[in-house]
Length: 258
Image 1 (cartoon, helix red, strand yellow):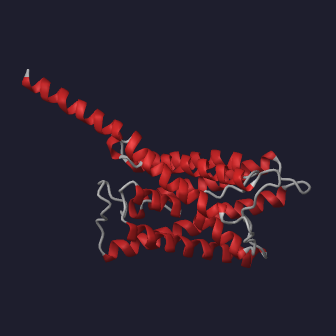
Image 2: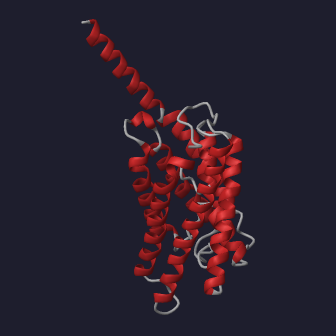
């Protein structure tokens, strides 16, 4: 996998591993867009009137939550199952992945997303899932919502991939991330469209021709949150596990000594 279990920021991969990781991120992001944004189309088709009801909101949350959960399960052992530049750069900021790997995988994510949006546009005549700000929410409010939503996602990813917690990351990673995405969509779809992912937001709005003057918030807020969440986890939360490991080691040594 591209994601290193060490805190050095060095990646233990060669060209074949990198190629597999690029393909995994491209295909995984394609599936996320195809299933998630396809779910948006299904919800809109079933909606009565111009407003999306609670059942439609639930359908979108399930589409994105289950879609990302299954995609992470499919590709987490190959590329880390990132599918999001905010996640890729959070791994860099946390010292778990190099800057070069984060940049390369971000390009793959954008490519996979564009393919997914292009296919949906070709099939449906438009690209569903473009993000937009609710008229009752200010741009500053949109920044706050996207920032804290992405922070929740980043913390979830870093926690579930932390091997010091004593369980394999692949076990809980798909479930935890899927539930995180599901719950965030329940709140954020009616407010900001639930971006969380600069690649997903960029490709859907480019294909849908909806790059408005406020679009910067779906790029800047998640990336700021990527750094903030990574530093919070690395310097405030992760030391807990180092302390716990040290205590266990000391107790074992004391037991052997007695």
